[in-house]
Length: 255
Image (cartoon, rainbow, N blue to C red; front, side):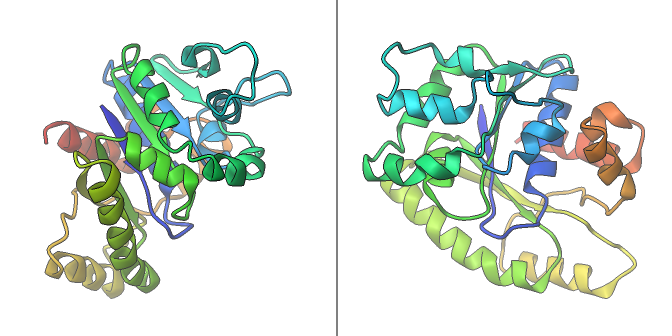
């Protein structure tokens, strides 16, 4: 199963949610691949992978499928192990930004789907972190995926952005991936003591959007896990937010 975490708005917790859902999947005994398509590489770093000049990355994979390598390698060669059992990463690289225009001009959006469907034979779960815009890489991810979720950070601007996001994704679904399913909206950085988050969630529900539960609370422990390069389910599995992630993952797997 291939799941995409996507929002066109930055700062909503995409990388945190992607990495922690992948980590929870690994803890559940699922051989899990985290694919980092954001040139910033936050998911790669958070999962404990530090790339060097010799590391094969998703940028190299795209160069290969575009025909820039004379000796093709199997997609599995681009996957890197993490320090955590059952968790693997197809790491990002800053060079993604440099090759995007060339890939798009040569219409290589379907090549990621081919590569990931090959890797699906080796992994139980694939989770894709995407850039914070509707660009070549996020489109390629949505074409490759079975399901997608939308992180929402309880900000008024996020409400405004969701309508545009859904319009874009539904058009892509109609043209390129009829099987793509919206699993729901993940509420991130939720503060139960404040009025605004509750009113924004109520507005999402009024728009008949599938709001997933539980909501993910705001916590400094998450930032600590970022710094430690250790996803929260591995870093502090008994913490409140780690338990929320576990419950969220369990709910997704039951749908």
